[in-house]
Each structure stands twice: as structure tokens, then as C-alpha cells.
Length: 168
Ligand code: FES
Image (cartoon, rainbow, N blue to C red; front, side, top):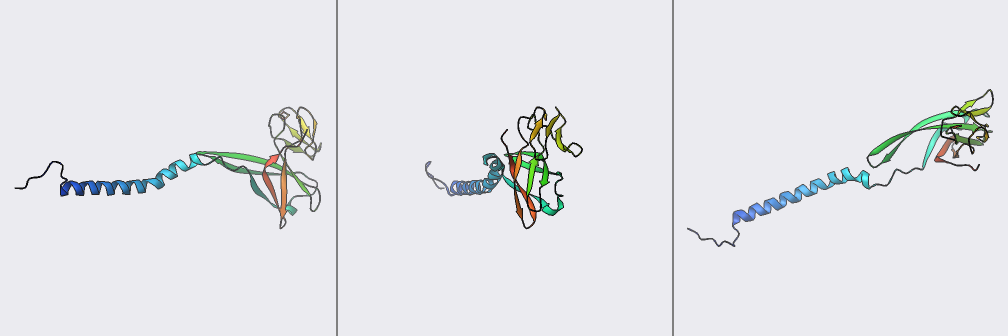
């Protein structure tokens, strides 16, 4: 018969404690990637707004005729994903010069459409008119259509998001 001191750790207790410690450590190590995956969207700053968007070969856009180009971009902010639709008008002035305008009316944000019969972009909401270069010519819009910085590389047209505001 063996007599054990109450303060003495038995071999069984020592093994139990060691196994519990190792189990806890393995659990913690396995949990770190999962927690990082779950929380990383919340710790990231909002999606970067700036982006270069390819609009295809410049030569596919006719000279002097505003041509529409639409695309959708997904903005990620934490766990929130928002699809944003962009509408652009590409106005090619000659073989090398091009300007690209947003289709968002500068009054209250309706989408303008090109009307070749009057050579104006017209906002259907309050009859705002813009000329071919996006200058506000009549109606309530307070300033020209926003414009995109363009870049031509190897014959392909790119625009930089977001568009910039032009002065009134
Ligand atoms: S939103 Fe375009 S004129 Fe009002």
C-alpha cells in the first residue's frame, strides 16, 4: 500500500494535464487561421476606389459619335459586396484623341442618353441637356458631366476610376 501526499501530483494527473495542454495548443493553432479568415474582411479598409478599366481597342469607337460602354464593378467593404453599374460615353475626336464622360447627370444623378437628332446628352428626369463634350447647356444641371482620365496603350483604351468633377 502506498501513501501519497495530498500536494504531490500523481503520474496520472500529470499525463492528464499534459494531454489537455497539448490538445488546447493544437486547438488554438488550428483556430487562428479560421478566426483570421472570419475577421479579416472587417479589419481591411474599404475597397480601393481607383482602378484602370479596359474599354477595348480605340479603333472600334467611331470618330465624332458618342459611343456607350457599360460595365459593372463589385465594391467590397468588409463583408458587404456592392455591385456598381457604370455607364460611359466615349467621344473620339480623331485618330489619337479621345474623351470619356460619365452618364450620371450632375443635377440629381439620373442617367443621360445621347440623342443624335439634337446632338445632346439628355437627362430624362428634368430635361437637363449637355453638349457632345458633356458641357451643361440647358436645364437644371449645375456643371458638366464628370470625365474620366484616359490612357491608350498598344491601341487599347483605358479609363481611370473614379471620374473627376469638372468645374461649373
Ligand atoms: S437629374 Fe438630370 S436634370 Fe435633374
